[in-house]
Image 1 (cartoon, rainbow, N blue to C red):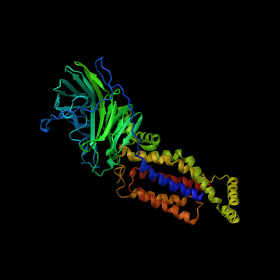
Image 2: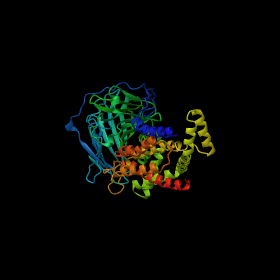
Image 3: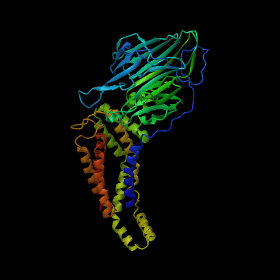
Image 4: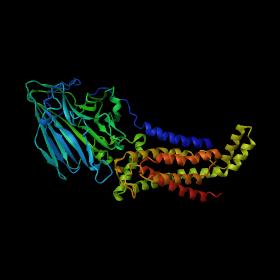
Length: 530
């Protein structure tokens, strides 16, 4: 029993670190080919073609001085578009700050993208449409108030005789931006190929910020989430072409993605371009547009926070971008519960305390049985010592005698270990929910704890947590020898140092859990008389 207990605890700590290290492992890319339908408004004579050939790119026709900027202001964000490519240069989120300070700047997304390929740039595959061609625009500025919906239209007339219209649709209550790209063929010859929508992002992030703890490309295809770190594209190109629902770039708290609309994305290709940026290219199904006909390819651009409710409301399984690891099935209900409490008591720290109490109640029968078993084991120690002395030269006989002693007193030697192991998945799930939820980002608790997603600035809660863990250890009955007990008493010190850099929200959970456990142990100690 003693060795098994130590092994269980050591394995718990080891699994904790291994889980944190490997939680970003990805599945290999799916490279099989499938052609979904996804174009609208084409003539009835059009037939799907084979996958589009490499794009035929015309020489750039835009000078920087020729491009104009268009600002769109909504209650949620302020976006800046450029007529060079009819694309999105930057987007400032009004409800989120870069730092946890009143005077901190708002979070700005997209501004680090490839300057020559801003988000929403459109390229022709199979016909000449350069992503930086100059577009005309129907408005110089938009201001969208609560409850309103408006559109912004960019138009490019090609020397080859076709027209490209990019219609952006805005809803004051949503982060999603509709993008309908219409190709009108006024030339005498048919246009054959595909449209490609582009998202770019830096392959290296220089800022040392917890926001970039998880950073890279992300794709939801074939009902599976695929994520790749930037280094994966140093020598490889990833392609996904089965039931692509969305693709983009993600960090710990924010997401930039383009969502397919009715199969408008046949495949997504992700690579490092010549400028050194990650380039995520969503290609539409192939089409043929006859003279006098048109085709429309629709997407939705999502540039916003990875708030689980906002993501789910957007549709297209976008909530899958909030990857909470192996125990997502437990982590997401915990996050929903945390948000439920917040609607009534707007303090996520209080919500964490409520969740801890609920979990303690749920696991009370298990932990009660565990501590009771350990207490009963402690009472048998003198008899076990006598048996070991009696059968010190016959190990098999000693084991049989010990098992008979357990059976006579109805004690399970594993009763103290199994309940601990059962709770490990719950701890990991809560760890992920608290560590990666934007809800806790810059969320205050009380006094000096002003950000539950960051460490305790004065290390007060980790130290108190270590002290409660030590008290808990002293109160827990043990069947170990003196050396094993010393090893066990070192665990509070190990955990204290480990938790010094953990988010204060997670430390708060562990601290409250320890306090409740101490109370439970006091109750069991009275219940099971010496």
